Structures are given as structure tokens and as C-alpha cells.
Image 1 (tube, helix red, strand yellow):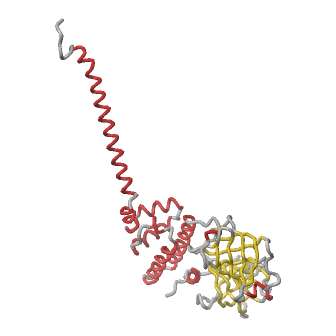
Image 2 (cartoon, rainbow, N blue to C red; image 1 turned 90 degrees about the vertical axis):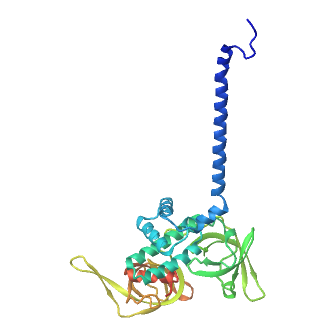
Image 3 (cartoon, rainbow, N blue to C red; image 1 turned 60 degrees about the vertical axis):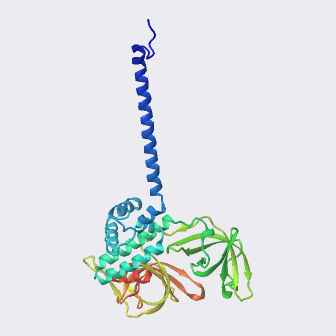
Length: 360
């Protein structure tokens, strides 16, 4: 058989499928590479500062609210109000700013005044405050304090005595080994001030407005030339955030008045209260939408009913409450922890506006 430079037809038919397979594999590899290259470019864009800045500054949309609602289990009514506020206030992307409670509170302050000017119902304003507190709790979840080493300088840290009295001290140093609190001379000279190495309670409020409690030991005291003293305290890695309340609570030093309230049950089972005309002056130390704490020199027993008046907060003639606990304080005073049992929604809104420092 003569030699053929092109090979036999049989060999050509055998090699053809191999070439096709190689070409197909090369095309597939090229396609995979192009997809990878495209996905990388898309990923780089989504992680670029340009894209993130666009996302930060664009208005919050319904999709953002839905994600937040599902992720943090925001109640349906609160989520609907949040969407309305975002539309009215043109609020930037909440997915980004929700971690910054200071910025959120500034936005909500403007939203509150907008609701007041638009003559929103008291029910809507009350829902607004519930939503506000929900967002505060979300902010606390996204930025948790896990150690006292994280407490910034100038924070006011409260020592809680065995009687429940709170003493405010300024944080003046925070090192890896301990933190230092500036304490006044009178406290340093107290005979019953906490001993060194005894476990004691402290609390402080973070920048997002939530209280954090912890227990630790005093390492030593130091008297300073300026007349004050310094308390050196060991660090704690076990901080407990107060998230069980339904309303935000704030410390105050304000006057209030209270009277006894006698519970009366008529034949039909209806409950009314007979309020005494005699009023006693007290000192309001903290308040929330659900209760308050009053300091007085009267040793009133627990479970008693009171009618309380807050002249600098609300014009309500009285708010009915029940004493859930009575604590004896130094200097012959008593702290009455009162839970509101009958409060109008208008009075509650006034109290919450007072707590959030919303002043018209």
C-alpha cells in the first residue's frame, strides 16, 4: 500500500473525538475562568468603599426593614412604624447605622418632634417609644461589653451598696490590670465603706444608654493631695446587660409627692382607689414608663398602694402604683420601689419623653 502523508481515513476518524473533547474541555475551563473572574469583580465591588458608601447613604427601604424585622424579631406593629418613620425622615440605611445608638437617637429625637407637630395619637407616640427601646436593645446586641477593660474614661460607674444605695464615681484610669475610680472624701471616710477584697456590685451606662452590671473586688484605696481619694478595682469579664425591662429607665434627682391609696372592691367586683388628701414630699431617684424609685424618710411597708405626683414631668393629678420593695438607706432614709398599676397613656408618654430628654 502506498504511503499517505495525511494518514489513513480510519486513524482520522479515531482522532477526531479526542480533539473535540479537548476543545470542549478548554471551552468549559475558559467559561469557568470567566465566571470566576466576573464573580471576583462583583465581590470586589460589593466590598469596595464606593459601594459601601452608597449603601450607607441611601434611604432605608422595605427590604432593609424586612431583614431587620426577621433578624432581630421586631414586632410587626413596630416594624410598620419604623418603615413609616424612615419614609418621613428619609433615614439613611438602618442596616449600617443601627449599631450606632447615638446616631439612631438623634434621628429618633427629630422623629418624635415630627410626630408631635403632626398631632399623632397617644397610642402611636407610645408605640414610638417601644420601638425606640427595641432599637436600643438591638444596638446593645451588636456592640456588647464583655469586659470592664472596654469602659471608656470619664464614664460614671455606680457602686451599689448592700442597702441598694448607688454612689456615682468617675472612671479616671483603665489599664490592663485594673481600673481606677475617683471617690469623694466623705465616702473615703465612711466607716461602712466596702472593705478591700470583698466582692461588691457596680453598674454603669454605656454610650448606647443601657445599664451593665458586674461584681468585682476592690484592690486598694489611695488618698489624694486634692482631698479626694481613688479606689482601685479589679477587672471583671462577666458583664450583665439589663434587657429585661419594657421601658428605658433613667436616674434623676427630682421632687415628687405621694399619698396613700386605699383599694376598694365594690359588690360588682369593680376596683377603685380612695386617695388620701394628705401628701408627702419625696425625692425621685429613677423612673421609667413602668415604675419609679422614691426616697423618703417614711418606712412604708411593701405591697402598699400609693398615688404619686410628678409635677416637673406630667400634669396628671396622680399615678397609682404599688410598692414592690422597700430598702433602708443611710441617714434614716428609705427607697420605695414602685410599680405603676394604673397610668394613662398620656402620662406614660410624658414620662418617657422625660426619660429620653425630649424637650419642646
